[in-house]
Image (cartoon, rainbow, N blue to C red; front, side):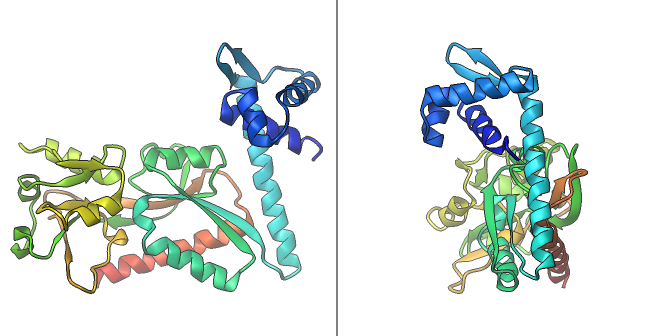
Length: 303
């Protein structure tokens, strides 16, 4: 335990990339920070940073040490949660990396539901694309990830997965709204806005388009699904999103229609954690709640 503060300082230096910037972030002098790091390196028996002209970066020994620190914090949090359970007082903290699509409706409902029963539990929600979310798990920056179409899945332990069809988002008076079924060729022949390439929705669109003669050529490309939902009301264009992030407004201004699965098979929305990690109590129980809610979401979509 005596080295936890040293670990925090080392992590701050790794994050900032310089002693001076890390010292500002941690509210100590650069000389004091440098002495603490040097003393720790002497006791540890190895240097942790490469000293570069423009700053510092972790060397392999430093990366191993930082991974150990994050694993130790995770274990400590888990034990603290178990001790809180013994006293009947549920406390803890849950960190989750998630896709934007989960923000408007699904995740706020689930967090509020959990906190009604366990008001001592706090949350951090990190908005990440599918690659970043997996990295968050590997570095212990997030306990859970809930993302659409993860990329690697090497250290990703799947807790629950549900299919999500790519939907077209459009104004209710758009000409495509009259079609009983939306084909991908019709969508790509129509002016459209689309998420950038790092998002799962765009990955599925690009992959499906390559099998035909069309391509995804958005008039507006964005990292914001909020922008997509709102922009289609300002120009006669369509957008794309997964249904868990969509609700038709009461005024009927927007419509959502799935693209035919003959052209574009559904992708997977996946809830996961780092493989082999024992989660803190609060995170593990929240994961169970999310898994059940996702199964219910699938059942409602099939009705």
